[in-house]
Length: 329
Length: 283
Image (tube, rainbow over all chains, first blue to last red; front, side, top):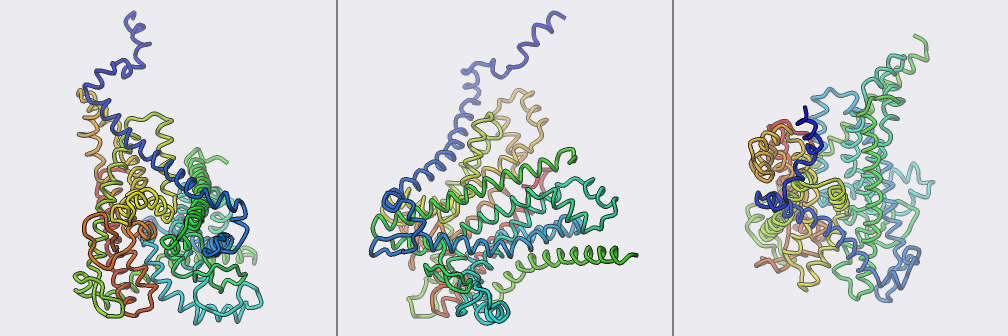
């Protein structure tokens, strides 16, 4: 009895009681230090990235200040740089893409999570995963040669004919422009919305559905009024993820947006986005102010996606934990 | 049945059918893309595509041999740089670290993962291109490797954590030191998952274009060594697709087919490896 009582207090920190030297001899401490260096380099590289973006955009910050975001003249010859057209283009294309992708993506996610048998659901999810793996330049390629001609010949004409009284659908049909970029982006982000929303919907406890059904609701009512609200946070998260992705997307947008720094209410008119202007002008930027203005645009993009990704992760984690719990509301 | 109930049943059936349509549309996009690329790329691809240099502007013919080799070299550097950091970093996270350090590293990795690829390009430009004073394979590989780190790190950590605790305890009980346990027990138990993670990271960066635009730049000739600008398949697709020549468009389709084929095959192989492995969670 006496021996047990004396060993109990020291039973906790067994590993800690081994001396540093003995751990070093066994190699544990060396392995720990080496792997730590690798892990630390990830943090270091990330900090360096933030630092470089900040440091690299000192000139325009000092010269233009907040006007950088409010003026719309982009003139490298006279060293005037206003980012408004690019910010406008980025936001408009992202909003258009979400308007298309959100209903489609959530609809598909509901089908995969609630209706389809497990085998079919998994198979379809496999295809969705493959779709998410298609590189953006391929979407751009298809955008240039399929979506743009389609838009020019049929869709824009049809929209003008039916909805032409709205300011969004006026002006000549070039094929390229905000609407085309938005559609291509929508196709690109749908897989992300589906994958995350499906996971979140699958994590909704079974008794939620059963309770709704037992109260006499139809299958759709149980899904739409009980399961989807339960998973609301996570679905919002998937939308934020998609938004972050749409804002930062470069190649596909560059190839179909028209690359004209103009602000126009019409979705038919060509525009420009932040990522696209960086892609097109970075290597040609002569002069420090020009280059640094582009880097500041990169910083803006970084901050936007940073905030959205953070929000998305919080929402998704919170929702899945709620689903994985006891299932009470 | 009251009219109201009939209406509710109709709405239910209709909406559920619509969700099926949504799923069908989403999945059919994949087959549409594949079909179109196979159709257009298949008719444009030829032996020359794999063996010849790009023809001078205005002449038809030629191929993309230099871009294929360039992509291979870029991906080699990216893997040499990104995979070890991701792999050893994950070992630290899963086996050695305490709460706060692990949180910081994970947070940094997630942040890095969310950075738009074009911004990664800016970073690599400032860090590698500017000091060396010219575009290079090295810079492009660095940019791509940077993107591999968070993917490799986070999934490898997941798979390491999924190794049953009993295995660790058994090894420790036999007197193995911690690093020996890791090397001989934990990593071998999780190797399928780790391999999958690395392959998926590889496939992800293989198609990246934006980070290469101002790091690897482009080149219409062979790129000797590692310090010259180099062509790569994704950048070639971009420049050829937006150029006004029909022959270049055909080559862009061919390059698109080759690139997409490679990426999809790697994805399928990676998932096959995982599904035949021991019980580990799907990432």
